Image (cartoon, rainbow, N blue to C red):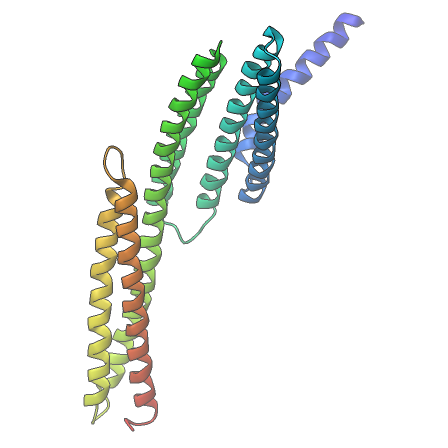
Length: 264
């Protein structure tokens, strides 16, 4: 009877382990975000425990207190990796659930997320191998470097998403301009209307150019290099493009009002 019960418990535990990856795969972005919040809170708690251990070691340098600094430090580093992992999973699912993002871009972002998750697993092994404060310092610096690489991937992907959205907005403005121009062709005295449409078209062309420039800058957000500078340049180009699109839309509205009022 005892053996049967043990086998049942073992089978149940095995089943739970097999189900876990499926559950993670079917998580929603909302659930993943909450998991990130939880991991972030846990990370803060472990950092506080590590700080307290360091204070205790500073005031009483016993072997026990020294080991506590190492142990709590490893806990804090593991918790930081858990937080980063939870954040990556949330962003991946958030992107996947966004219908405005094209599949190709989703796949690129997913590949970057998978690469960073693999890096996290490798860093976990480094943390496990820590035996003293020197080891901890080396691993911390390595994690800091990987964090910069992660931010670089995030910046590049965010920029590409913004470029896609900007192009979508430009497509909408262009469709509006083409529709109004066709309608204006049937109006006899349409010179002023056409003039407004030409102004809108020029602003649209400028917007397209600035969006292309932004995309070129975001594509260069990589290491080695100057990723922050390239990211900032891309943002500036998109801000200019946004102004171009607003101006184009304003000219189109003026053209529409002229058409409605008969050019008066």
